[in-house]
Length: 202
Image 1 (tube, helix red, strand yellow):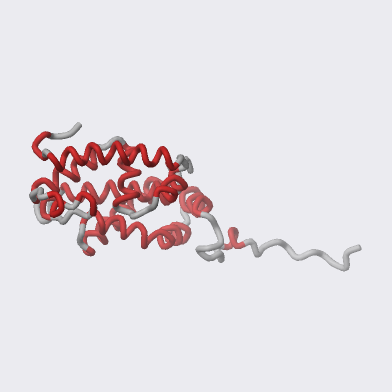
Image 2 (cartoon, one colour):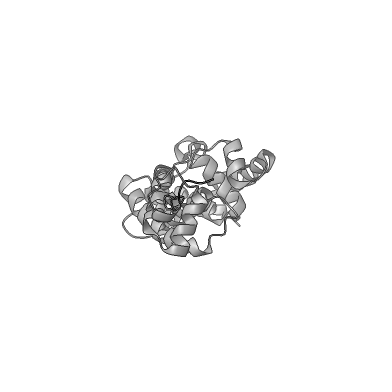
């Protein structure tokens, strides 16, 4: 027997927006941002991944200022693309791809800072170690950009984001063997560019 009316359930943090960034998973924040236009949810989402996104941009473009520009532009693309995000991949993977694409676009952009003016950020493909010239660095990044999407994503998560094979496997929902296979194929193409930068790539 009840002694009085039960209080209304109005303290659900997902209803009044009082939840903190650790209280909802990414997919819930994406839903609030895309379906309700909730900018605070989007801000929480970006804040959650800000360090990793900036690190990815920085390792590609090489300059903190340029990395900041890349993240700003990528943030706009992420916001505009939220409606098309279906959760087939994790938000982190999807956003990394966007930042990577923006960063690679930035490297191609003349005139102030082109890819040939940038240091290579991939340790095992460091031109200093392989005696390739600065012009070849630009060709190397062009080769990265031209890789099939699955190979490019694995390569950049490994070499640019610094993720281990098992982390990439979890991120992309594939096996570690598949990660290794994609990395092998990507590195084979890129190694050929380093050995003969004038040969071009497909």
